[in-house]
Image (cartoon, one colour):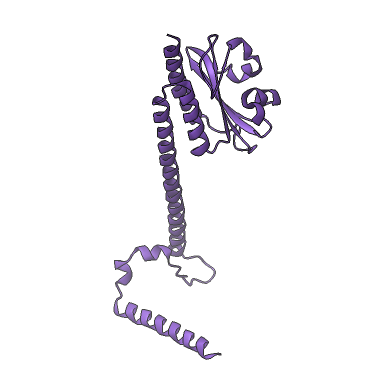
Length: 233
């Protein structure tokens, strides 16, 4: 054994002896530090039989570990929800501050692509009257036959779109969009839709929840309807 290894063994033995001496002089130590008992492993020699006390201690230790993991998961979920709330609040405030439809389109693109990691956005509004816009599509309602299936339920749709739906919504960028979320905009009637595209084929899936998307649709429907009405007056 080398000198360094010998010194390490001696240090370990010295430390353990110190601990043993301290516990001998302080027999009530574990009464004053009960949480230590939950993480200690103290075999109870009973031959082949399992001590009831040992079994209970093991079960309590396992339960404590599960509760600790569950609490950690709850904290992670709370942090995620708090982050989502802050991002959503920023987007809603930006939409409420929008004075024009182009402002709306820019606010959506900045929020959905920066904060919510979308790769493409497309905002389509239906109107038979011309509107002065640059960053979104204004189309007559009767030209929406291609995307009619995406609007008939008035509920968000997530997953992979057909080639023709992708081209209608994302035009030149359609070839890159592998999955999407499409949100009908409804204010008495369907006034348009918002599409969020991702280059990841699994980013948007049909099984995912749509509560957040529905909320975005409700806010956007009211803001867009108000601005369209003001511009047509």
